[in-house]
Length: 420
Image 1 (tube, one colour):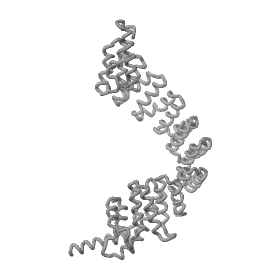
Image 2 (cartoon, one colour):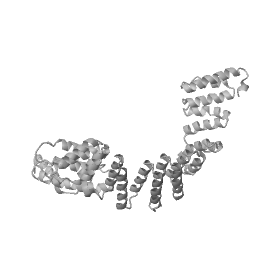
Image 3 (spheres, one colour):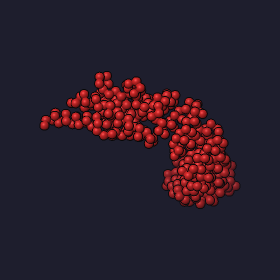
Image 4 (spheres, helix red, strand yellow):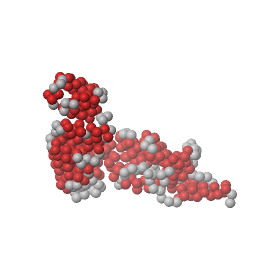
């Protein structure tokens, strides 16, 4: 067999595979984080590839580049799919324009070029006969419109998709959020309520409903629905954290504390709950409570030790803070915090004794630490050592402090003990 004939054989096999072979699966990233849409994408790919069969059959001795691009995109070969589409004359008669524009739209969305994707999906829908456009083309267009915050048009595209997208939970969430962003608050809440009834096992609708109510300042209603949601056996720790954090950010600290304290009882080892609860207590003005909440979590997550030590410092429990600081693994974080704690404890000799360790850790470039060392040397009467650090200060605020410290040292004169 000649090379030309072999090439034609491969072309025919490619065309036949594109025409009828196997069911296609969704393009990677096209329905990101939407499991239900993955099934829908599978169906639309299959229908698109099937619709390309007459075009391929009419050209038995040529590669159907539109169908080939669809297959390449399905396999994640986006660059090669672009190259295949580049071989297509978009103005030629007989090409499958629905598949052509749909693939271009999916590739544009994969590249985060959502405005271009909107135009391609609109062109694909327009290429279909009146009333015969695949509903998923409208949904794809709605997703891209949503990504560029054209919410009114996104809602219209969802409506154009009709009942075919009702089984897709992601479409309901998109509709609700578009309505909310357009100021249609009650319709958005109604959409979430209807979706919650349809998808009883999906708690994301109730969670979103609670967040919207919090945003609207309806804290009592948000708390009521939140408690109903969290009373379910399937409520996870992340649900508590989301609602508690939203209440805290909205200024309803006491309600947030109630949610998060309940969460800690149900999920005592969850780090996210511990952090959210500690933050709520801190904003309530109780750093000691925040420290006590976070301290057990620091036993499981040693990277929290610096934060817990700082909370105890703010609560005035300096010895506990110093003890926790001694267990910090990161040398830089440990030394910087330790200098501050020792200064508050007025252990100036221990502060100056840390100078070699600070130098080894390359921390003397920190002007705050430089000033702390200068101040500790000054209080011990070692003015020469203090001046060595003061001359390295350039930050305006610290430069002014250095000037004041020099004046005090000059006033002390020979009686350095009087400045200690």
